[in-house]
Image 1: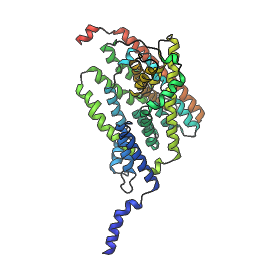
Image 2: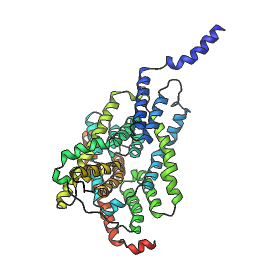
Image 3: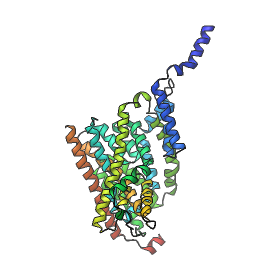
Image 4: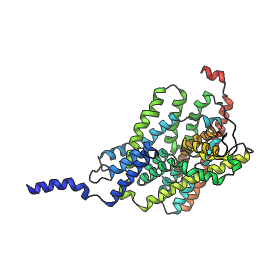
Amino acid sequence: MLEAFANGFSGLLAGFMHLQISNVVMIIVGCVLLYLGIKKDFEPLLLVPIGFGCILVNIPLANLMEPHGFLRTIYDAGIMTELFPLLIFVGIGAMTDFSPVLENPVTFLLGAAGQSGIFLTLALALALGFNELDAVAIGVIGACDGPTAIYVTAKYAPHLLGAVSVAAYSYMSLVPVIQPPIMRALTTEKERTVVMRATRKSVSKTTRLLFPLVITILGGLIAPMGLPLLGTIMLGNLMRESGAVERLTKASANEIANVVTLLLGISIGATMDGKIFLQTQTLIVLALGFIAICLDTACGVLLGKVLYVTSKGKINPLIGAAGISAFPMSARVVMKEGQKYNKKNYLLMHAMGANAAGQIGSVIAAAVMLSVLKGMGII
Amino acid sequence: MDKWTFGVTMLVVGMGGTLLILGIMSVIIALLKKIFPYKKEAEGKA
């Protein structure tokens, strides 16, 4: 009888007995992510489920990421099949108004410059000894676009998914802190005070309807490996602009996006098992992700300076910083920075154009990258 | 293929390709705007 009591009692203590230092550290990391999401409002929709998933997966003996564990089931169903990021993209397309970039198509170029960090960081990761596919996954943090980073990493470097996702979402929320010093360092006060002409609504409904179709067909033909990303975001946008399927548009932008965000977040958190996550490599990935976003901002501003010169001073180079995909946060940062130097300067709509272009640019950059990899026989 | 070749290829073809595609898109949208200009009345009826 006494032995049975002892055995039963040991069952209750087994969890504590199997707790390792790495689990404790990761439970603390999970709590920090929850703190950042709840108290600091840093991307709470993602950081809260990620933080909680991180805590869950580091509790020993629950086996939530073992075959048939509930986190493994969600992970296999949505991340391994690439379904979650793609469903999120339908929602992003349904939520995003691309009118500002359609009104001023030259801002597409800023959206391209804002992706430079992807390729520069990829090269840096290779120089630091990462293999080709790991370097691609690290570089894609520079897309500043969570679903794109998750899509590419889950497909080609799933062991880096936790680090890449946390880096992508954390740095996106830190855009207001990361970008302004770079913007100030690369521009003169004269450039920052340029007042841009107010945009007027000048895009016909036909153009807005043709836009997602043209982008899908052209982008798909040039970079077919990225068609799932491009096709889903453009499907969402077509539904929004057509106005014919309001229920589907609303469902994509709200219910579907919300449910998938929850499942996506908790699945990412589930990849943060202490034994896998706590490595020097993770810290290097986080550092490279930071560099990627700094490089994106710098290249965007530098192209903005080129446009400032070619337009004979009509374009404020600050809007180049919004060429990254952190939508609409980056545009707000540009607006705020511009008003610091000229209170009457309303750069928001121009910056929104660059920001919307960055949204498309990140998807195109990932699509191009995957197609080049395919062409080189790496994937 | 060595890492150097891979890195430079990704940098040149990848970044160049992204810039090229978005540049083409920019031109196409500008053309679409010329072909289907915004008309206040027509948009109002639509």
